[in-house]
Structures are given as structure tokens and as C-alpha cells.
Amino acid sequence: MQKSCDSPILILASKSPRRRYLLEQAGLCFSVIPSDFDEKSVSLPLSETYGPETYVRVLAEKKAHDVSKRYPENWVIGADTIVLIGDTILGKPGSKAEAKSMLKRLGGQVHQVLTGYCICCEAKNKGFSETIKTEVLFKNLADEEIEWYINTKEPFDKAGAYAIQGLGTFLVKSINGSYTNVVGLPVCEIIEFLIKEGVVGRQEG
Image 1 (cartoon, rainbow, N blue to C red):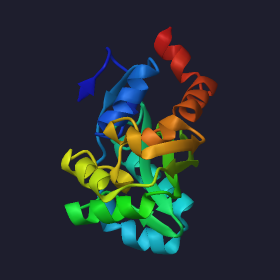
Image 2: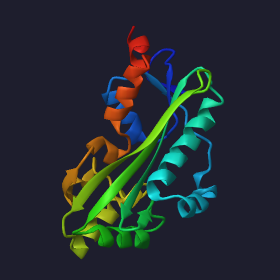
Image 3: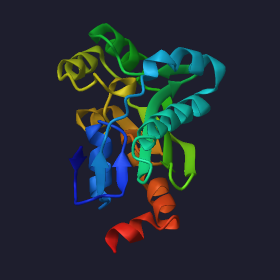
Image 4: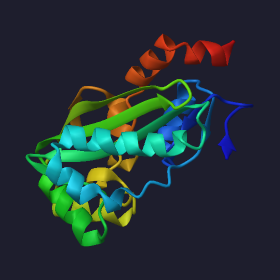
């Protein structure tokens, strides 16, 4: 178990360094315990059954509850992020060719970044989940720009094959909505919930 402070009441059920960084920047005290939930085992059925907004929220719920069952006294944060262009969900590219295809499709277009998140506490039988959406406009991308960016290796392990907080910032012309949501976690909404439940106050007190 990784900890950012002594005996934290919060758990981040994700190994994403980007989500960890966002919570650290928000001044929260938390442990990092990645979920063992295998999202690949249910992704296709879920994406076919639900629309994108519900799909990404359900994945976040499954991740959060997987960890919450093991640590029922803690508040657990689970999240999942996808990129949506038209009716197509773009996940993490599995190859250079797939990353190139994604970036070509996103170039010069508006796409949506959807992050589903869930905060729950098993012992209190409490939880909340929703999906936050941000619109992102990419610049027109030349083939050499795409090739250079792919060669940096940054697109891999990123939904939509880019990282807005990294080198991929040069791809983005404008956004409409939450910036942290594009990074991977809607910090504003999460802090609001934690304050409402008194979680942040208890940690700081």
C-alpha cells in the first residue's frame, strides 16, 4: 500500500500517476491501492449495452467497489476515462499504427473526454458516481507532427493516444469544460463531494 500521509481515510483505486498527481495537488491525504477489476473482461458487453456516459461510469463503480470491499471503512475513489469522437470510443492504443490512426482521426476535430468517477464507503453504505464531459478541439495535425509525437512514446497507455498535461498539450487548440477531467479526474466535483460528506474536514482535523 502506497501512502502520501499517515493513516489516510481516502483510497485512490487507480495506478494512474496522473490521477495521483491531481489528488496530491489538491492537498488530499490518501493511499493508492489499484483495483484488481479486469475491465477488459466486461468492456465490450458494457459498451454495447450502455451509452458511453453510462459505460464509463459503470467501470468506475466496479473499480471503486472492488477496493471498497477489501477496505470497507475507507472512502474509495474509482475512475475511468475514455475519448469519444462521433459515436466511436477511443481507448488506449495497443500499437503505433493504432495510435497514428487515433491521432489522425482527432486532428482538426472536436472530441469529448468522458471521465466516470465513483466515491464510496462500504461500511457507511454510501456512494456517489457520475460522468463528467469535456469538449476538446485539436489543431490540424501534419503527418510529421503525428510521427514525432508517437515516437516520444507518450501516446501509449493514454485514452485517445494523447496526454494534455504532457507533450500532447501542443495538440490542443481549446477546451470547453474541466481541464482536470481531461487529465483523468474531475477534481472540482470530487472535492465538492468530499467536503459535503465531511471527509476532507476529518482528514485535516
